[in-house]
Amino acid sequence: MDAVLSVMMLTAIALLLGALFLWRRGGKPVRQVVLMVIMALVLMVNVAIWTLPDASGENPLEQVEAQQAAHGDS
Image (cartoon, rainbow, N blue to C red; front, side):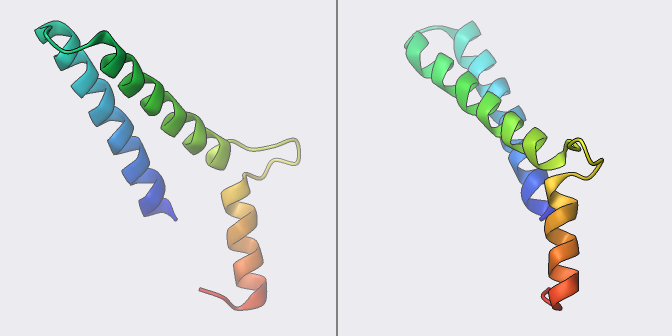
């Protein structure tokens, strides 16, 4: 699961860099740049949801890993 979160963050960074490149280069519709930024923000929020702790101090990723360990899944 850590690899998936890492790929999501790398994708978000690539989207932001691509949007910046397209915006500075011009010629492309502004809508495409805005959509790339929105997609990057959605990816970052998803990573934050999975990694930030809740009121009990555990994040959802730790809870899933604990359940898998309890059931013997890998």
